[in-house]
Figure 1 (cartoon, rainbow, N blue to C red):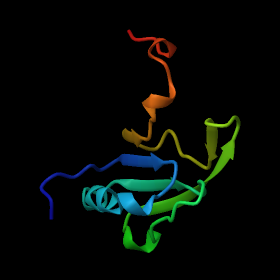
Figure 2 (cartoon, rainbow, N blue to C red):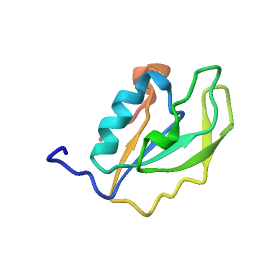
Figure 3 (cartoon, rainbow, N blue to C red):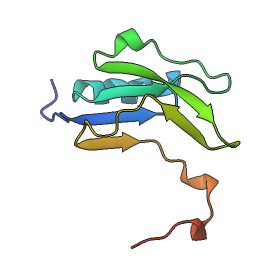
Figure 4 (cartoon, rainbow, N blue to C red):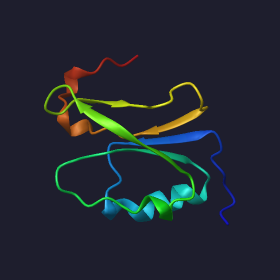
Length: 98
């Protein structure tokens, strides 16, 4: 067992890609709760039963080509969040930093 535990940590990801299963397994050993989106192009997803802390599959609703909303996410129940962010989709000046 790993010496670190990430209790009260939620992982929300666009999709449970099979090629990231090793990373998800490591996070699972740290007691993170998992919520994955239900669809993406033609990438194979992992078997959720291999993750002891898998909680739910969220419905990805595409608003624009690269922007989607995930219904069913529980935003106020966790202290920490690990969220997917694809930064190469944006230009440098699209963000405000404080």
